[in-house]
Amino acid sequence: MWFIRFIQSSIGKKWVMACSGFFLILFLCSHAAGNATLFSSVALFQAYANQLHSHPLIVSVFSKGLFLVFAIHIVTGSLLFLQNRKARSQGYRIHKRAIKNSQASATMIYSGIILLLFVLLHTYAVSFGNHGTIGATITRLFSSFFVSMFYIISFIGLAIHLSHGFWSMLQTFGINHPTYNSLIQRLSYIIPLFFLLIFGSIPLLFLFGTGQ
Image 1 (cartoon, one colour):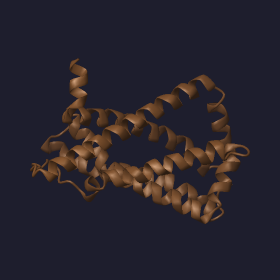
Image 2 (image 1 turned 120 degrees about the vertical axis):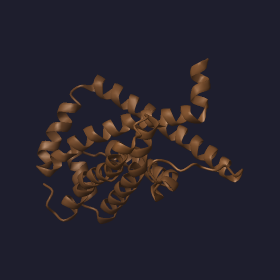
Image 3 (image 1 turned 135 degrees about the vertical axis):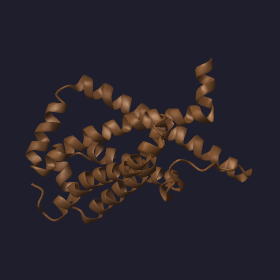
């Protein structure tokens, strides 16, 4: 089938990465909005979580869909990494792009590994390590200095990953024009910084005793 041949090609894999990355960014937006309730109080966050889990079918479908998208993103990204490394070893010359690649581009696989480790540990902590309400679990986790530092370092890894991933996604979608490239380059810093500030500030709230 043409679709199978397409996703097996280099450009096809990039489209899979871009589309899956787009859905993951949407998830980050919704997750950031929900987690931002912690800036008000743990009680408000708990109310949000209770309302969300009052629709178990929606949560189940969403969770399974998110897992599938995440798995597709990881597998495709790994295949592209191996493909690009093989091409470099054969003397493949990469043409200059509209926006110069940052250091984040060369470290995508490594920041991705950090994020995978974070997702696995975070999922375990809030799902299997949950001995009470989700609000109580979050409070207990972020009261630990080492856990909070791990989360903050992971969110820095997320920002680094997004700084190239966002730009690469737009390039794959064909949003590449001298008129917009300057804006795209600024957004590739602004958007990761936005998520870093939202997610990274939450552990600090509890670490310094201001979360309640």
